[in-house]
Length: 116
Image 1 (spheres, rainbow, N blue to C red):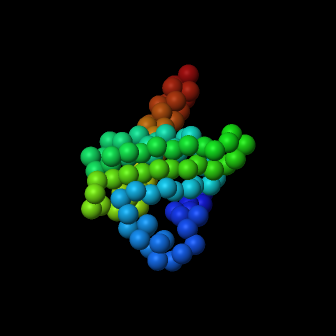
Image 2 (image 1 turned 90 degrees about the horizontal axis):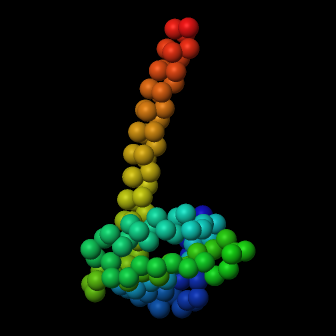
Image 3 (image 1 turned 180 degrees about the horizontal axis):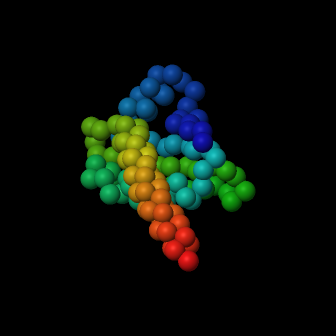
């Protein structure tokens, strides 16, 4: 996954100002609807988010464009990063619980096969 915050902005002053803006467009390569839907859903649950949407320019492209607007005075990029951190935390929790339950299932299956 590669993230490009402002691929169309070349001017360093404009780029710096845009990165501190409450509205940002982010281009993410190597990702598709799986991450797009999760991220949009998480951002939509956050009270500081006014608008969150993504699009995939063409099905043959491995690129997603994400548009985010947050409440005035907040930095959209910071909110975006927080949503990504939230998804990582949630994924780790799901993975941990799955592995625990799978281990219990393996133990249960081993017990039933040895009982015969």
